[in-house]
Image (cartoon, rainbow, N blue to C red; front, top):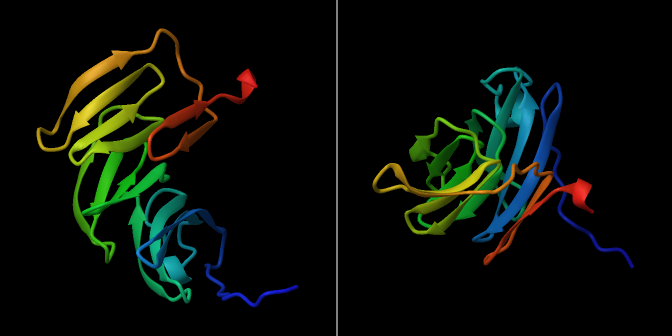
Length: 168
């Protein structure tokens, strides 16, 4: 049996790629990257050789809007804002993908996630740090007894798995 599905083609003149698809409130939120100056559906990129983006599509695959980001998206979570986590910053976007607030960190993370309304778990290769958005500072840190070389992050509602393929 075959089933007809909605289809639409997006892209630019050069290399564009979707990375992850999130479904929230009957819309698709898609992260990806494009070669800078590629043009068309998701703009011209704007940063370095690759432009990273998040876009909002309807269930009918109509493009509502997109936002260009400085780096690759490592996680997206939905609450009062769309929290877009990069390696060293958080964008808090409204649901029209306009920038509302954000924070940029001095260090790089391998993964970030909200653990409470104003608290962010900030995983690095050496430690887990807790960042308080209201206080604009790290409030706690736990150092690992080893360095993490993470190949994949599996994030569920209650747990974060940091996976190293060499251990398999």
